[in-house]
Amino acid sequence: MIDLYSWATPNGHKVSIALEELGLPYEVHRVVLKEQQQKQPWFLKINPNGRVPAIIDRDEHNFAVFESGAILIYLAEKAGALLPSDKKKRSVVLQWLMFQMGGVGPMQGQANVFYRYFPEKIPSVIARYTNEVKRLYGVMDARLTDVPFLAGEYSIADIATYPWVAQHDWSGVDLTLFPALARWFEVLSARPAVIKGMTIPDPPRTAVQRLETAAVTVTR
Image (cartoon, rainbow, N blue to C red; front, side, top):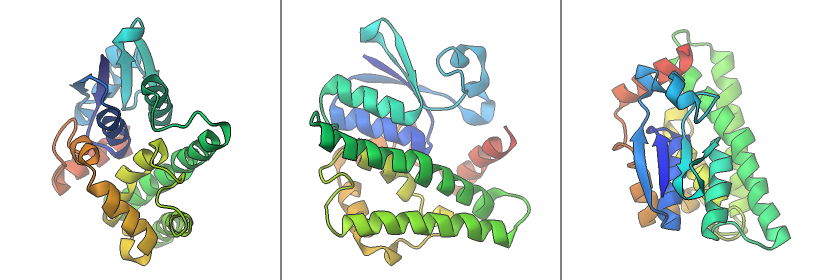
């Protein structure tokens, strides 16, 4: 049994989608960001960085894993799916996973903050991050003109990237400018596990709820 500690964020949704896709039994524990629960001592014992998501694997003597990419790798290896055993194919998956972790997530996160939430609108900063998101989307679009999924076959790389692309409009990016990426997004959006995973731990947030969560993120 997996204990999932999460909230309705793109990084949180990565793990809930993966758990649904892999069919692993899990129990959800909501970590309410606006109440700063992620900074409480009990949670810091699970994730010393004070961020969601995190998991505890009860089957492995309550082994804790934090950082969403590391969690995806751990779960895929545990289930023996969504991460190939072949060395080269595995490397391709990990390359695109790291692309999301080091590029799409951080840059789009900053675009979200400065485009939507930051009290002062700074056009040069907004342009810097939204243009970088567009560049990264362009990289994925070019890749997806040749293959159906980022690593060729459906994998944790796609799962990691989907929840961020799902917020493209929130970052001020028009997905129709990237037809291959838009096609990929539609395919993933129809997967039952993705649909279910995007509702965990709570239904999709309203604009007001997004603003409340972002205010916590900006000030913490």
